[in-house]
Length: 349
Ligand code: SF4
Image (cartoon, rainbow, N blue to C red):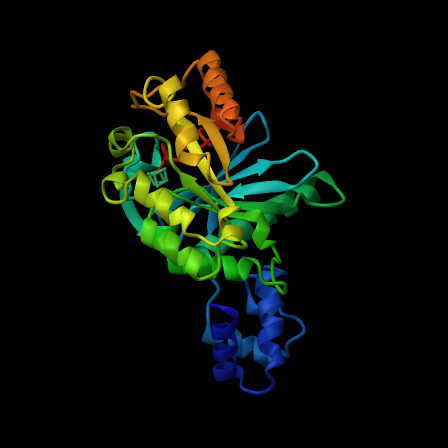
């Protein structure tokens, strides 16, 4: 429930003073309790009534695999008993970045992505998106208690780059962001949240129109410099091609455009040539943007390969020489299949 829906529901169940909805919101989203009985600033009668009128569902952590670099992959069980994944990445001295899923599986069939092999199962509900963060924060809290650490690690950054195309689940994703950034709840900064899209142009336009793009970062998964190659590796391109996609980005208000990142998964022999680097400069040179070059992270069954270190260096140097700001993303958690493009539930029942 949004804050407003919660207020209406609390009014219908408890009646009386409006401030109780605010107290309950804080119990749910700041204290992260999962039982009305724990809401100790409510009367016992109100706690009883709440407990009978509603139920509090939480995700369950099935497994939390730990990689050599401290990255954790959480396998979570949702409302229908099905599973999906979320990845918690430590930033030395700066808390954690969490990679969030918006769907079980995905419908978009990007060739370089293990999630695509699952096909589309379903969209996650708002609470299943929000609770990925709360479960991870609870996990860090439990670990701090076990180790006697004074402060638990804090999740400071969120990226919607897990399973699924977040803008295909627009309503639930934006509702989840509203809850996670509420100052009375988790209070995450919208400026530390990034939503990634494979290029769903109407939803990107809606995201900008609704005013989200000026606060929340948008990452466009580009990955090719010609329609011929992008059609092959990202079938969504046959619907909205590179020119249409970049046209939508160019039409964004300038402050929103500044928050756009382009992701470019580097695939050996597919999109890593000198000609690709030159075309990327021509395509993006006019835009005030940032490029994340992501060396491909292989998964079982894929014929695609990561370019050699020398080929990556050459590609990046050519882009930089052309004036692009390029950051090469270091793979995180690749020993537990938690790196970009590797989420696929290989151990699912
Ligand atoms: S890269 Fe993203 S949009 Fe493409 S198939 Fe994978 S999860 Fe879906």
